[in-house]
Amino acid sequence: MAEPQERAERAISMLMRLGISIVMPLWGLAMLILGIRNMSGWWIISGLIVGGLGALFFVGSPLTDPVFKDRRL
Image (cartoon, rainbow, N blue to C red; front, side):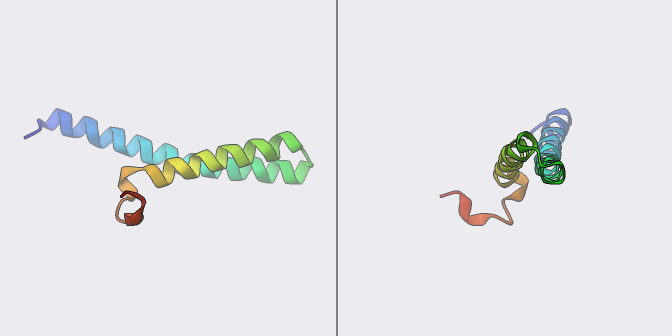
């Protein structure tokens, strides 16, 4: 059985990963909106890339297993 310190470290690690995977798509969306509003190709492309990577991190997070059951074979 894992010690309390190990369990706490694992829990903090999972929460940090989930937090980052939630923030990244939101930041990508904000960048995309900035790009569309200012007609800036750089912000649009950056927003699409950051949002796409954030979505991949979110779907790949172990805390989303109950929602995305079919992603692992």
